Image (cartoon, rainbow, N blue to C red; front, side, top):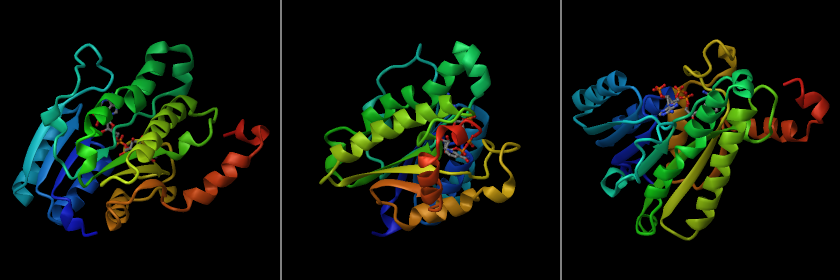
Length: 245
Ligand SMILES: NC(=O)c1ccc[n+]([C@@H]2O[C@H](COP(=O)([O-])OP(=O)(O)OC[C@H]3O[C@@H](n4cnc5c(N)ncnc54)[C@H](OP(=O)(O)O)[C@@H]3O)[C@@H](O)[C@H]2O)c1
């Protein structure tokens, strides 16, 4: 399947470093319509301007905080209708220690990574839309594979998202629409700065190129691939070892 097919992209978490790299790579390869959703008004306007000026792309923006349920309504049809690619990169690592004692931090992690995302996926995966060709890419995390003391709030929220999307993969079976769950390992982004040594992190420009090799891939994949054997081992580690991670 040629990348040329992706002429339009809808992005939730569009100010994420990996989303920016994917959008730039898409634009280079001919994608000319973007719908960018972010919390950050200034940054997203700047990025939209860049895509318009550099690639003559048609770009719409929406400002949204996934934890803001007071203003939540069912996402309207026009906001998600008829894009070739739906990309979900919003995510919040949060502070696990704080979350143990602070219900607001705990809720923020769960809402930003799972609960707040569900209404959008619901709107995208309509019975009509999945009859037609298109794809949904959702970033979960290797942290969803096994709960660890250092990040189990984040990991469990991602596991919820993961399970939800696995259901969608099964629901879309035999349909034109593909659902791709990307279990990312360490990427060099603002999420990992100061937390993970640089040499362990893959560049987001490389992530974009890897993903665009097979844009309509369906199913669950580790990114980079070597997280597959690493997580295989972590899943079988005894609790005495996991308790130290
Ligand atoms: N980097 C890694 O090593 C790694 C590993 C595994 C999985 N992931 C996942 O990969 C995805 C992309 O992350 P990244 O590495 O590119 O990190 P990033 O640059 O920090 O991007 C995360 C994005 O999520 C947005 N976000 C967070 N909370 C939100 C909320 N309540 N409402 C709306 N947007 C919110 C942030 O918006 P603002 O820009 O406004 O803050 C940010 O743009 C995330 O889902 C992350 O969990 C990353």
